Length: 423
Image 1 (tube, rainbow, N blue to C red):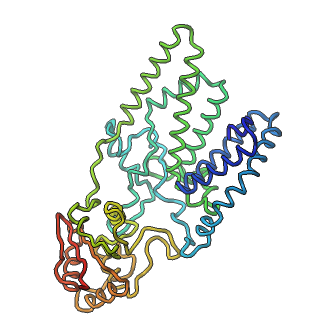
Image 2 (cartoon, rainbow, N blue to C red):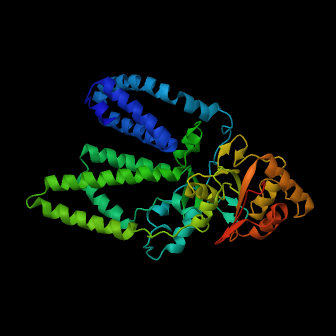
Image 3 (cartoon, one colour):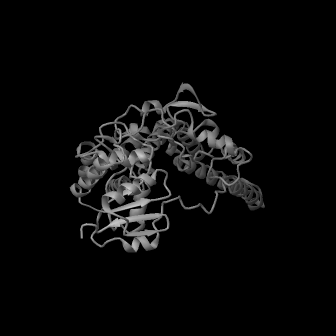
């Protein structure tokens, strides 16, 4: 976009490059593409307001390149976009409600989150901010409390030091633009309503307008933290560069000392809790992976693969995708999660044992359920069952498969596996 506005190249070349970049980002992450597009629009508005006398020239440059980019985008994304909005099993409802836990609390910019090693004595407060006033529950599990989505923390010391840089370079156009976009991204990351100390103030924010635009409505506010950090990095770079260029000799000394203080503040406040521990039950033992049949078997797991239990997808990845999974984590015509099996008895039993129970009431463990289990395994051509025995509720599941298939033909660590029972 900068090259287009500055007309550094032919509109044809810049337009093709823009089109290919949009296509690449679509396949990497559609949500990040939308976030970047929103910030790009905000940047163009800021530039137009800052240089109103150049609007005509800028508009002409943008239109030329965009007209070249559009056919490239349309040719390469026509089918993927159709699959997204009208293809079989496409989602027909919102992925998340407007008010969901994946927003930044105003305090989250100042209070260390659960992934920071240094809590500054605010660990309990940081954990409480993570869920906010809109937790999502599956049975006894609070899945809204996902530390990976809690990335708004910057730290008061870093904000103060960056504020000094911004103030010193306040007349610099690039610093003005980076600062404006930083504020836009930070405000959007706060979600539709302002939340302070895990309590909603019901004060509407600009994200509320985005929440009513088709396709854009599923963007999660907290993920604008990526753009917040990007703008913050630009502000630091621009500020240090400005300090280096405008200080009297020895100009390197002041800028170097300030840069060192800033890096020290970043290290101390942002230091993550390395090394991260492996998630419980997320990795299949090597012995079990080598015992998986070579026939790419359809597999049922416990915990059953759902939104709340994505671990089986990690098992599948660990094994080099050597088996296929029943269940799923996806937004489809049936809402969040996999379709209901027919008959539904086995699926209901597995999800109920995991305390989810969103597929209907389960049958009690007995001959009827054993018969349904055998029917289901045959109907869906299931060739392998994997049960993680350390998962709460696994006892009845082990008993069910023992009665339906006999004892497991392979056990290691906390895993049991049934395979090749047709032979």
